[in-house]
Image (cartoon, rainbow, N blue to C red; front, top):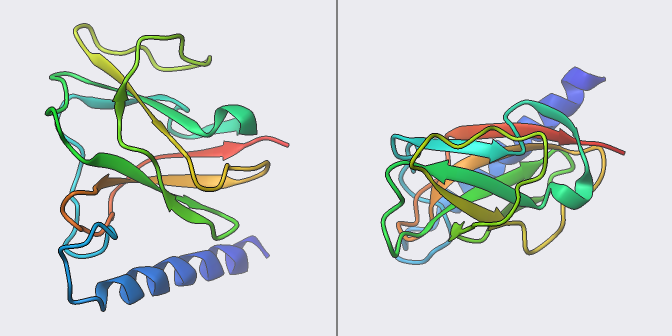
Length: 154
């Protein structure tokens, strides 16, 4: 059963990416076009940690990251979040953050700038596996690198 769900999920994601690539106008910010590549060097996920299980759904809608050196001012970086229930959405762009980070979290490298990106369209619910793909929203690229995955609790 798990293999068939994973196959259906993978097929749906592939179909969505192919459908998005059929749009020949790459000037819009739909996130589909050439591959986005990887995050810049010195980029790290703080919360939820990569591979985390049982992340409380109320805390799964904010993703905390750090970068050293700081991300370029005016960038359009964000994540493309793909859930096991088929929901797909872009997070907000990264905003500088100075508050507390939910626990447990990875510690930022010394000298890093901490950022937060939020799920804004459809909150992540319970019992969801989530893949976060790197996206450079200003380029119209296709998010193709999973930078983190986590699962929410009941």
